[in-house]
Length: 295
Image 1 (cartoon, helix red, strand yellow):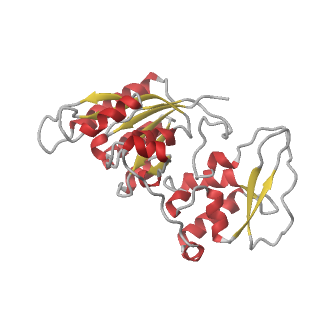
Image 2: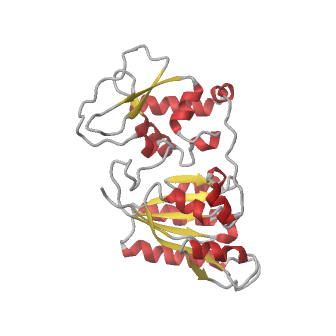
Image 3: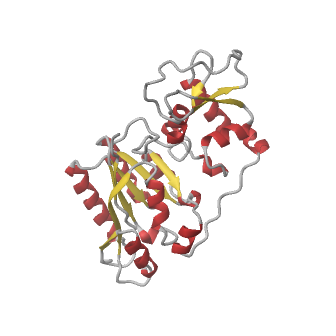
C-alpha cells in the first residue's frame, strides 16, 4: 500500500460557504492532505465566518493584504507557494479549491511535472480550469450527514436523480458510457467498471455520477437500462468487482471466472464515481498527496 500525498489550497473568497470539511472529506477518498492552507485577506470582514472552520480542520490561514482595489494579490501568493512545494519533490498531487480560471495555468504546470491535480469549484467554474485538472469535483455535489451540517450550519441537499428516460435521451452521456465500455471490454464485451470510470475521467475531468443525482457510477449505469451489470468475486476474501457490458453486445456469455484470483486489481469503488486512482485501499496503487487550501 502506497501513500498518496496531497496539498490542498483553498481560496475562501472564491468559495460559496465556509465548509472546508466537505472538501477534505472528498480529498480523503484519494489520499491524505498533508499541507492545508487557505489564502485570503483575513483582516477584512468577508472571511470572518471561516475562522472556526479553519481551526476545526487544522488549516493554516495565509494572510495576503489587498494592495489595491480590484486586484487579487492572493492568487499570486498561492501560485508562488504552490511552485515552491512542487519543486520540493515531497508531493504527489495538489487540490485546488477555487472557481477562478486564473489557476488554469497553475494546474496545467503542475500536471506537466507529472503530479495529479484535483480541482474543486462551483458549476460556474470556467471550462478551461476544469479541463486543466485530472479530476474536477463540483462543490454542489458534496453532501454530508448531520454532523457536517451542524459544523457548517449549511444544509446541503443532494441533487435529484435524473430519470432513466432523460438519461437515455442524453446523447453525449450515452456515447461516453458506451465508448468507455467498448474501449476497456474483453472479447465477450465485459468491462471492469473501475477501468470504465478511469477512462471517463481521462476524457472528461468533471464526469461524476453525482452530476446526475447518483452516488456511484454503477447506479448511474444501471439507471440507463442500456447495460448489463455483473459482480465477480476474485476469491481469497477479496471484495467483488463489478463488470459492465452493453445490452446490444451479440455475445451473451456470462462474466468469465477471474484469470488471476490472487492478483491485485482495482475494485469498482476506487473509480465508482469516475475518479482517478488515489491512496485509498480500493485503488490499485497510490502515492502521497499533500493538500493546500486557498481561497
